Image (cartoon, rainbow, N blue to C red):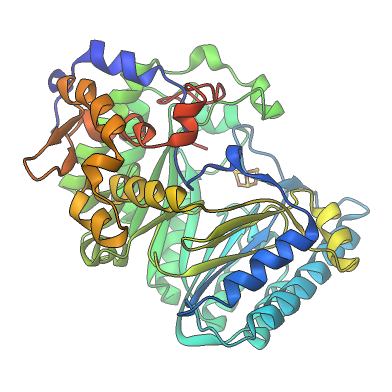
Length: 473
Ligand code: SF4
């Protein structure tokens, strides 16, 4: 096990206290700007017209949830099915989503093959079987979906029925991601998410029986009432259920943004040294159980596609976490969804589902914010991508992609890295390769990446809402 004793706690505390982004995009959305509908439409048209054309990955956002989990930082709308207007609101949203699907597909010329589809939320299985099938059919009718497309969906074991799982398999879904968070009863009660171990185990059994090729878990550590003992128990129970991938997220404590977090007992949160221990315990136990540690916070079985993608150099990091398909243009559909046109631009749809539906029904582009990437953005994006995905930056690879000399272009950054090297976060080889050390460099990966972030540097680490080792969003 990577022992706590190999971590210099003074160094760790000094770096862990900085407010830094997680780089699920570069630039981070904080630095995007508002876009008018005409400009958004122009970005989409320009992106679709680039040559060579990239294949597609589609993300669908289904924002509705039956009940609120207090910790949740997702873009979700709590809509009890018993509410008088629940049907009308769901129907209005889904009709807008269908309209957006058809409109975007027509912009795309419906020619570029779709390699991946992901349904996220919210709770996608909030929808009835009829609505799930309706949206799936709209997608497959509108787009050129490849025969070997990989379709994944986030499911909540508390609300997902066997009937829904059977339907998903029949429609070709092959990967499910279960929101587990924690198995501890006290923690579950505190976060308003009662989900006994037996319920999760039964859901996993159903998914395996139905032939889903991959079952993934989302876990969270660092929440109130979690201790090293409860988290170790969560890790061991997870290993017993043998998911194929595990996203092991750090709790995003942002009560200034998430009103429901204000009622949480943050005085009961583990301190940063305890959270470091929870991180190291996960690395030790999951890797001993046959998982590969991937990126900042993911684990995957060694024969899993994510690990294969890491070996092939096609692994990706985006708003969905660590994914495959780094060379695919990602099209976001639905409220708050983000489109990522590789090396070119980002667009994000309006967040509120009702406002989204109104814009779509009014034939107005739903994107509100975005960014066209400069050459400097693309260059830094590539460096940061290498760090998060491979724990290493090879200057020769950057120089192959861009017409620069790495040591000249990043002279300032290399000077700033010297103190991180002295503190043991990185090692720099003779050929200039920068490698994150383990465990200190891996756990403080964001601090190394931030050195290459021109926006963070220009704003002198003033992001102010995220603590490097206390948030996960
Ligand atoms: S954690 Fe999932 S189920 Fe809970 S409120 Fe957030 S999106 Fe909904």
